[in-house]
Image 1 (tube, rainbow, N blue to C red):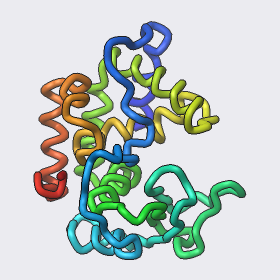
Image 2: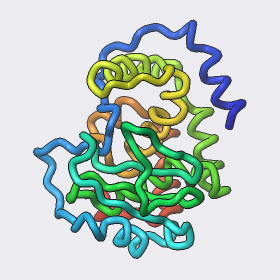
Image 3: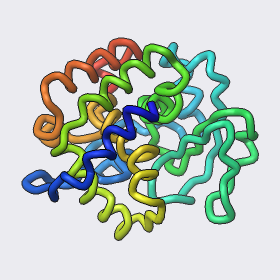
Image 4: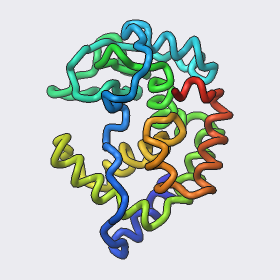
Length: 217
């Protein structure tokens, strides 16, 4: 993955500023209040996802509930992240384990799958890793340029302090990967941002993970 990501960054100095396409929120799990969905009890959201999606059942996924602690809905914790004073690692997700911390009682199971798939399975599952490599290779100059505006928005509105390259690799590109795949971004946006080949790739990811149209609603 390092080589493909490096090739993306190599062209940054030649990419112009994006224009003409609205910004998709840097925290795509924050759904607009006008989009209705059936709430899932927060304490059962991770368990519900594990029960619903076979891909999650053998990962040893832990969970934590911290209602209202963050402006977004959930956070994936990998095995080695110790957390920080500002964002401590939950006691119920010990080091050496992976887990999802829930900040909102309306988290849907597919949102849990989306975070685990885009932050963990793309590194550990051979098929998901291959799909993500294909996605990285497909990123266009225009899409990469748009992430500069995304980054400025995240700095201003979310207090983002990481260097652009780190943020892009760890946060923004995974968000682009799941935005269409898990129905987190509006269709009128994804239809303009992603090309036909990328949409076909995302549909393959959906099929592999067992995601249905009903689950995307």
